[in-house]
Image (cartoon, rainbow, N blue to C red; front, side):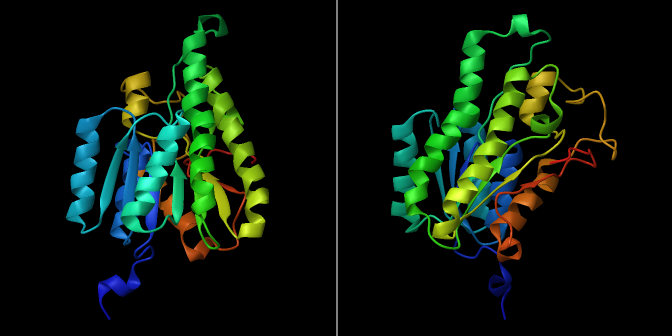
Length: 253
């Protein structure tokens, strides 16, 4: 038997938002290694998106790039339709797009940034899921990216943490609605991760000054393994749940 026979996602069609860098990119590459064809939604970084595309093609998989805003319902629908047109189906949706604007005081929060955060992190997630959902079938799955901040809060990320809490509730609610169709809906809640977004937001320092018990930030690749588990038959009894690759933080949820 060839190596192809042991691939966990052989010929699966996957749509991932926010996959030009960080956790999304790590998930895209891992899924491609496991045999999936990947459609990537990204906002504006064409350079990083093209690099990710090249890496996936080097793995021998098909890849599509869609540049746009998940807060645009028409863009979401077109991305889903083009994915299905190219790959013939859609098996897995991963909602990973997100943004954050830190502020030390609630009075420093700008209304524009609050609305942008909610639009990108939760409203866009709902719109993309709405576009994809009618095309999913029994055995398919949706995986959402939330955060440890949904459980612990974060003194500099009030609005971001609020959206991540909303993602947990959205995940649990959609899992209930999806049961009759046999579609599983889960989420992953990383703790501090060394990604371009966290470096841009907090510089080279830790995202959280209180290090997790393992005393280091996770790598995107370490977090990606949780997404792979939730996308395979190994997690066939898991829906409406959240995995916590957070270095040992106790979050009680």
